[in-house]
Structures are given as C-alpha cells and as structure tokens.
Image (cartoon, rainbow, N blue to C red):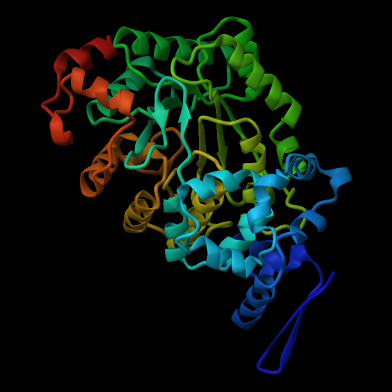
Amino acid sequence: MAYHCSIRNRNYTFSNLKTLLAKATPFRSGDALAGLTAASYEERVAAQFALADVPLKKFLQEVLIPYESDEVTRLIIDTHDAVSFAPVSHFTVGQFRDWLLSDDADTATLQQLAAGLTPEMVAAVCKLMRNQDLVSVAQKCEVITRFRNTIGLKGRLSVRLQPNHPTDDPRGIAASIADGLLYGSGDAMIGINPATDSPAAVATLLHMLDEVRQKYAIPTQSCVLCHVTSTIDLINQNAPVDLVFQSIGGTEKTNSSFGIDINLLQEAHDAAQSLQRGTVGSNVMYFETGQGSSLSANAHDGIDQQTCEARAYAVARHFKPHLVNSVVGFIGPEYLFDGKQIIRAALEDHCCAKLLGLPMGMDVCYTNHAEADQDDMDNLLVLLAVAGCNYIMGVPGADDILLNYQSTSFHDALFLRKLLGLRPAPEFEDWLHKQGIITEGTAFNSIRGELIKGIIQ
C-alpha cells in the first residue's frame, strides 16, 4: 500500500510502510549509508505527516519483513496482546503521540499497555516526537526487575560497574571493582567484557566475581559478557552464572550473524533459571543492542536503523530480562555521526524500550573517531536521568581501556544521584550504609582501606 502527502503543491508518495518509516526518521548517517533517508528536509516532513495518519492497526497488517521468512516478525505477531492493545487500537500514530503526552497516559496505564504495543508502533510514534517529548513520555514509564536487588524503581538510578581489563588481570579488575563500589556503583550488576571468549578464562572471572560478592555479602548480580553458547556450557559445568548475556538484533539475519536464534536464547534462559541463584527475583537475562548493528551485518532488510533497533526489543521482551542496554554510540560514526545524532538515538531507544516494557539502561558513549565529545555525553547523561533511565555504565575514568571507547564514570553516576536526588537500588543502598560507604543524604564517607585491600587480595 502506498502512502501520500502534499506539501506546497508538491506530491510525495511512499511505496510501502517500510519506506515511509525510513523517510520519516530524523537524519542519521547510517540511514544515509543504507540509502534509506529522505532526500530533503521537506520530504522528511511529508513522510512524518503521512505517518501521523497511519492507524496503529496497520502495523499488525503490513509487516516489514515477511512472516514466513523472519522469526522476529513471527515473534512480534504471535505474541501480540490484543486485550492490552484495545484501549489505543483506534488511534492513528499522530493521535497516539498526543495521547502519550497527555495526563491520561500515566504510569499504571502505560504498564498495562506495554504488551499490546509492537516495536514498529513505538518506533513510528517516536519519529513524530521532539527530544523533549521522548524524555516526557519515557519518564512516565516504570519497569521494575529483580534478581538479588530491585532495579527500575522511580527515584532510583543504578549503575553497571564495568571493570574491564585488556589482559583480564584479576588484580586490575579487582582494583576497578573496589573503586566502583566505594563510589556506590555496581547495583545494576558487576559486568566484565572479557578480553577472550575462552571458557576457562570466563570461568575464572565468574568465580572471582562470585567470591567477592559472597565475601562482602553484596546484594548485586554478576555477568561475564561471553557468547551465550559459552555461558550455557559453563552453566552445565556448575559455574556461578548469575545473568546470561547476549547481543541481539531486530532481524533474524542479524541474530544469525551473532550466532544465535530465539530457541538458543530460550535454552540459555531456562538453564540460568534452573540455577535459582536470584534471591528477590528471577529475571536472568542481560541483552545489549545498538542502532546500526543490523546495517553493519548487512542484515537490515531495508528497514531504517531506529526501527530495526526497536524490533530487537521484542526479542528482549520475550525473555523478561533483568537488564537491557543500548550501547548507543559504540558502533561508530558510520551509523551515528556526531553528538547530535547520538543524543537523539539514545532518547529514541530509551523511550521505545520503556514503552515496550523493558528495563532499559544506556551506555552513554562515543568512539574516538566520532564527531562527539564529553560535553555531548554530559548533556545526554542528564537528559536520560531526567527521563528515568534504569541504569548507566560506571567505567574507571569513563575510559574503557579494553574496548577503547569513552563512556561514563563512577563520578558521573554520583553527580546524577546528587543533582537529581536519585538513589541506588534499595537493597544495595542498605549495603552501602552498613559498609559505611555512604551516610544519610548519600554523602560518601572516606575510603575504607580494608575493603580495597580485601577485594584486591
């Protein structure tokens, strides 16, 4: 079905819904690289006008990738909750935007609606929003998950402590862990990107993390970000696996390029559940995503990168994850060229994920060859915190010496908590008080040498 709009006596025609979504997307380098972006600002506005008039029901009738050839499409259609969708089923995309910004769309209503929305619906409505709208809508969403602590409560901001080391040196990792804990980071999880996917090396890191956690009775969860097949093997060897990590994408071809499919993710989920290591809940999956991953794998099927990203959230949602993270600026300037594009993409990703019911965090980051700097990241950091982002990254000095990119530091998280009155996860906050790391009012005490020495030793 073709879609039409006229502006200043000029007629614009968009051949199908996939094309319309792409042309309506705010400009970014990845879509230009794929040849999908609007040819002019006027064409983009025309596409947004046409998109605003599309009924939400249309996204259930006109799929972007054929049902028969893509398991992500099948998952989206087969798991759609018509009852949850009913209250907004009569809206167009434009009407949906207006409703989301109204007082009628409160936190409880959005929680009930999430299962009735498809990725394409939320991607479409976000294309009609300015940045302010994306912050406003996301801030109303509350997505709560539990494993050894509770993530996502309003008024809280959690931190993934990311103690990466270029040689997986246990003492170097331990020093970063101690540093992060003393700044109140680590409640989202302590998660290591290993320098190698060697099962033996991953097992060593898992045991190290578990020993530290148990020795100090830290109410958090750990993860070593290896491939899901390695994690399954380690679970079968009784390794202390808390959260199962995997990068995912929004098309079957993208996930195939990662060496995964939905059945494999289900196997990993069930294996982790069988360990019953959670104490306050059983959300066991940790997924990472990022705009541009499908394009970089030549697996986007002609879909713009923001919509591809939103489709990845359908895969994540199916497994009720503890954490989801868009590594927004990590893939590079080929896909998000500068700070402006990175900020826009991050706000889109966060809003889309929250509307779909995901516990969304964000790696506020950029690569050194992008047209971005730390001021851009400071701006985005505050915007996401105001928008209710579940968690951010905590990297020593904000400079990841393994992955060679710029992220956010322990100090950045402390800045946000002090600025906006945000607190850590409640169980983790209690532990920080008991350790004497923080006092009432979240004032941080002097460094406790025994904690540092104990962890590093």
